[in-house]
Length: 193
Image 1 (cartoon, rainbow, N blue to C red):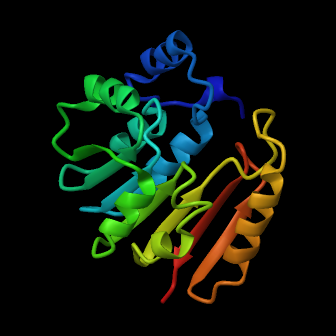
Image 2: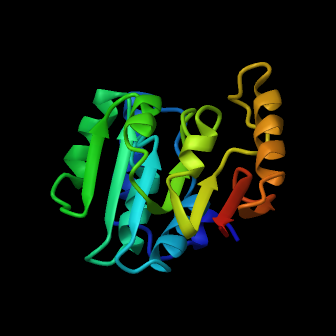
């Protein structure tokens, strides 16, 4: 399957890709993780979802496509320019709350929140504050991360962080995980207790 064969692409997707090129955004999520997130989100009617790392809003577009009208999504990024771009595309969607904040600060300050799915697409929630982030997930909820296979834009030494993260997830007794050699390398974990 190639990306050209993916159906039901969000209406704004091509425009978001053009905007990414225009501003030189070099870390967009690919379509495969988008379709995967849409599917997982659709499995949680009236769900409560969290995206750590709004970026250009490419994954956000897919998540919104999968959500029903009673679901809610919070997306957090520390870059005001990216949040403003996302506001321009999605600001009219009442299911969405866009927050410009340091991800670590947000995680620490919102430990009472519980989510059906957390997509950690930023350093916070993935390589820092993992324990606190996993604590935000409801039993039966998903923790999703991508970029787990080596990428050309990885800084030197990044593979060590990835390996450490995978080791931590594999030893947890309260999550069942699947590692997928697909897309950019995806791990999905489900909280079991």
